[in-house]
Length: 140
Image (cartoon, rainbow, N blue to C red; front, side, top):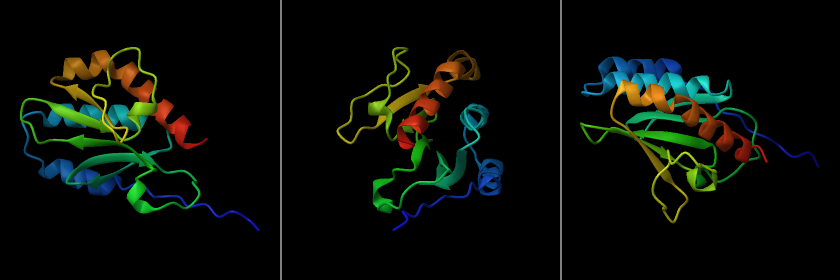
């Protein structure tokens, strides 16, 4: 018996439209984070989930319960006006000696906070390393 696999298509047009309509004082930070995360690896896709840009693995995975969110990497949280939170679904499994990821949630989430374009630029390499490590964990 052959094991089946699923993929998921990225939806950049949906996120582009969301970004055109977004009213937030740190909209430029959201866009910089978006481009940084997408540039981490060609297998990173995007969509609007929970009313914010979200990023996921587009490649093949064995079928799983959608409520597990196993494919998801990062969801943007825009609830605060003075900072953007990135919620890393599997962040608890990532080795992060830089300290980018904060919190220790029971479900394995970790959070990174960004308040300016300068902060996005200074943390760009570490952010992309974290995304790539998450991808590696998904593909095991």
